[in-house]
Amino acid sequence: MDGNEVGGGAGAGGAGARPVAVDVARLRSLARSGVTADLDWRLDQLAAVRDALVRGEAELTRALHADLGKPVAETTFFEIGVVLSEIDYVRRNLARWVRGDVVHAGPAGWPGRATVERCPLGVVLVVAPWNYPVYLCALPVVSALAAGNCAVVKPSERAPASGAVLARLFGEASPAVVVAEGGPEVVREALAAGVDHVLFTGSAAAGRAVAAAAGRLLVPVTLELGGKCPAVVDATAHLPSAARRIAWAKFANAGQTCVAPDYVLVDEPVVDCFTSELCRALRAFYGPDPQASPDYGRVVDERELDRLAGLLDGHGGTVVTGGRLDRADRYLEPTVVRQPALSSPLMHEEIFGPVLPVVGVKGVAAALAVVGSLPDPLAVYVFSRDRAAIERLRRGTRSGGFFVNVATSQQGIAGLAMGGVGASGSGTYRGR
Image (cartoon, rainbow, N blue to C red; front, side):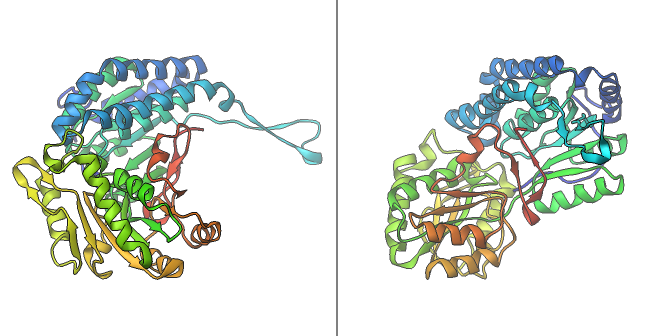
């Protein structure tokens, strides 16, 4: 997953050259006043953010189309709808979550009692990527506000239209949220100003840089990174539905989704049938010419197009469908590559685009060997009706989440924690 890096100075909240440090100082003063810890205040801020997103939906839709060619349906459901559902879920449950947990004191504490209280941290820096510019800015803000914190939000400069709209909407919604527009230097300035936590979504390389910079200041971090999320399809799976779900999960947002299946491992006896069903699903979703489809997005910029074109060169497999590129339109046709070399960059680097390798394997053991040879992913998807095989794959893999007969739908489940493990991230957010 692409993201931001660490650097130093920028404007905030649409205020041009105003230093981020000024906004951090104001937010810290607000947090230390105690007002942000008040339950009713938190609920009011969440309601105001919800109202702002609803009010700005048409403007956000236009901005997302300008940045990513994002279809209206994807904006309505993924970018805005999921955030609204999360706000509603949090507001329904927050009063119960903020209560302290009573711990049995035992003889050592008699006659008193012990309680674990959840206290706000203060100011949270949210560093968001370009691929879901609204969703991945707004969802961490919901978590920060619900926990009684203020937030400095750094959207990606590679989605400038979306960032500008969010700056205005958040600025109107809550005094506890500031959007700092600018390049990667904003992150270093915010860290130097003394934020209390960093919630970063982006690439593993940028995540390491952010974690290192924050670590020098003893600022804790939550990292949601990327990785090659596998889908494993065995011979017992219902192939038409598996193919449709994988195709939808992979090619939504033109493949630029951190939890999208990055490659598919298929039992050899059914790999031909699965590949045919996958191509059939793509035609059903996007028609004979995906470039003309209102439901198919665009690659964010030429830099990403060049990277993806490089992955399609010398992979050693067969392009079953797709592969056409139109640089002027930032378009890469939905592409399926059959049996690329396992040693190729296509099978080692996170693709993060509309290219899906399909590899035939000899059963669960071979699938586990391929998955285990790569860094831990954000998600593992298994399509099977064999409970023993599912359990073997669950126990034999390590990931941020393990999902059976679905793909990426976990992103729409309000309250379900998000996070990775190992190279795909550390810590979680969302829900309680």
